[in-house]
Image (cartoon, rainbow, N blue to C red):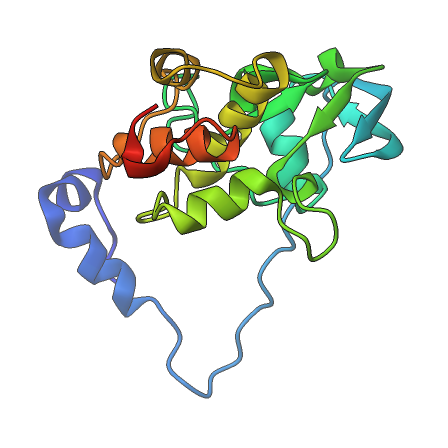
Length: 201
């Protein structure tokens, strides 16, 4: 095979030369190396309650809460939008308060209670907030919806009868790329039982 120089590769012809080195169909190929998953990162055993279920688990000290929820507990209703604590898609409740789970280390959750979107409904019965979101056409693309729901839940936990201004303020940390904010406000007002006939609060 023609020797590949660094200059030749950088100039853009390297990809074609490398392709020549791929074995033809039918020729023996060596098995690909198995991915290495072992990690030497420090680990801590934590105890926490997730959606009403007590858990004890070993986590790497560098894992975020959203990483544990999605990748290790398969609670994928919590979304990752920006991974920088800016969009609110990953909002969950920790001890009843809304937090960005991408900005919380899992080890900080030791002894705490976490509620995700999967814990909002009771069996097949939707939470009143979820019903209100559906009835008021709040979800559009749906990506931010779980975070919006959890932020709204935290708001109603602390203020069961909010004004429109309080709803807007309580959900200001949750971005909607579809700009469906008015529908979210209407849904939260309806769930709180404060939406009057005709839409006036």
